[in-house]
Length: 475
Ligand SMILES: [Zn+2]
Image (cartoon, protein in one colour):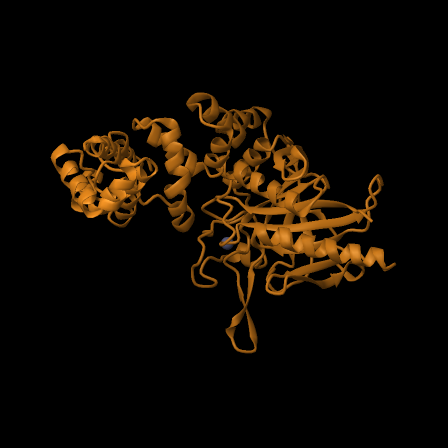
């Protein structure tokens, strides 16, 4: 039988601050263990937390970008549990009075077209440290550099209906947060982590089935794979009369399987209570309005503007705005004088390949514009321009025209040179010449190809055809 899948996602994003949530320690990634710690983030007796104003600003900004209501009063609460990466024995989070509630993410579902998923809440919290299992044989070490790093937890409504839809939601959510400047959302550095809740129910049923939670997913592809695996497991259980238990699962990406971490029955009661060291967080309505007004152009608006202002297809606008840096680069290339569709083709082609590989732009926008102009003016062929692009990517200081000269890729339109190549080709292929003259017109392509080959790609194909016509019509 068919089952409906119901998914809700909890996303933790690291806010882009220089220092931690409640102390002045740096949030730098990749430094030697325990070099960014102090009495506060180590939880030493007597140390007091002081909220990071920039973290509050970024979280509010992210909430507003997601259409949430930011509350004038929110409350920091202690979430109590014992784990070696949590020196205080509790995590400072927000519980019954979060920073923001009720937003939405509009995104393109692969199955249902354009839809919206509700955001239940966005709250501030601090991260825990990290356990290192590979530093010392047989021992576990603790690195507290991450402890106290500011996070926003973003909880969605159970509005998502398939694993592929979960991935699309996450892609869009990430775009919004990056555009808003809230987080770099780098999954490699752990600044975006996902916990996914999933249940199934017969179609038409409105009550939710028993859900399971897949924790700590570290890539969007793995979110989709893990949810596929868990959906299959739940349907298998349901159809063989088994009972779906409320459990927490981990995804083994290597095996493509989920396995049980712990059952909810033995899970913690966190005993939340307001942190006595932190007064309620009070935000002035005027300040909230300022944050709203300061929001930059978000992906949807930019997509619409690129389509309208540059007349590029909707698909191109969608791809270009997928990464803010890519959209910026595209606009710089157009500003440097390149026709918009031509610029879009380049940015979605070779430029995007190098961006995906390196995360940057080896060839600056003005240089790419100069290169594209060479193609437009017929100085080099499109094929040659791609070779020059690869060359510029290796040696960014070069001028495109100089590189074309050096590589011998400037197209030859000189009639004398073209005539000489044409004559050589016709002399070398008397049989084909005779067949062409007796009516096999399709051999023209063969002759053009031979001339291009003989000129090592330098002949301007537009100039070659007329010369060939002229020679072949002579008897
Ligand atoms: Zn600290």
